[in-house]
Length: 475
Image: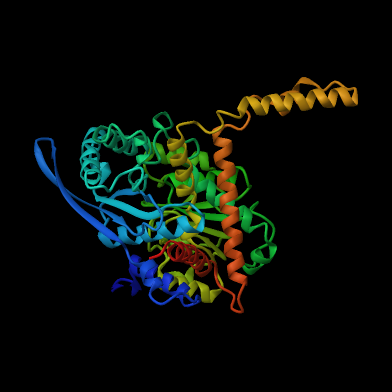
């Protein structure tokens, strides 16, 4: 089935075709690729909730794509356009991205047809708790089997409510707090989870620009500094991505695209000013010191160095792919480029860093949170003062051997009692994970006679790891 508007394959079909394209580059035992690709189960639920004296019936899904590793992991999104195929596609991507970054989870995803903006916080809580109850009592929420996380339309508060529902149902489960990730830090969450996808994208781009031979393929050179960047989507992912790339790496954010349109300034936008205006007005239109583009999708076609679609799927299709001018496209969202558009962009020589790897920062830090919850201890708690004491001993040794006195500011910089705090460890682990995965993808790209693109190489990497797991444990 194709998207009739653009003649493109739909989201799930695009994911499956990308999978099949990678399989053609491999030599798997007969039938194993079908086992890996198949979605294990999809649970569809309809449930009533009384809202303002009337009964509303809501429809939701929880898809479990793979249980080759447990628990299965994946977010829950709230949106009006959620459907079963989308949930299946997202669950499949979760399976592959977990394998790419060596996170020992299977893939899952959930969705509820709802416009969160039309309900009060109290009503959203009531709906969320009922949805969680329906899922948990059927085994679709569990710290050992199926672990949700935030996605579009959900966040920390929804995860806290879901965790509380599970705790009430299974009060003797000592690991109940690990039943969801993306919780508030005060409820067992982890520092660095909110920024994780954006921070992961920053680490990926830094690693990409460490390889001049890869950068050369795009026609660019140097590093992130002064590169012109366009970002579509100014939610959690888009905001943190623009913030880190501009403030810490010197990137120039020239356009930000949202639902109501786009703001453009070739000299660069002030991210903090944009976010302040956007939060106050709930729109980009009217933002000063920038040109407003009513049809935001047109801004995808502007001249830039790096294009980062961080909104929803199917934003770059066969309808506009040939007009995309960015030499590098970084898929921060899930499925923003259709299979048809991917083929067009590859033919043009566009370097595409694919969603199946790029936005894996979220599940990586979710894994850290899950481990933290199971170990029942905050990261850094055991070693912070040890690190401080070790630093003091080194300072004392240097002063004694060199017969010098080190000033207090230098001592403080070396022996700062903050040590390896949880956020430092999370960022360190995320950086190492994204860099290691990039290097593994590059190795696959170059290991055969045929040079593979990043997406195909990433899928090959994921499929190889999953296939190895199946073959070692037995189908």
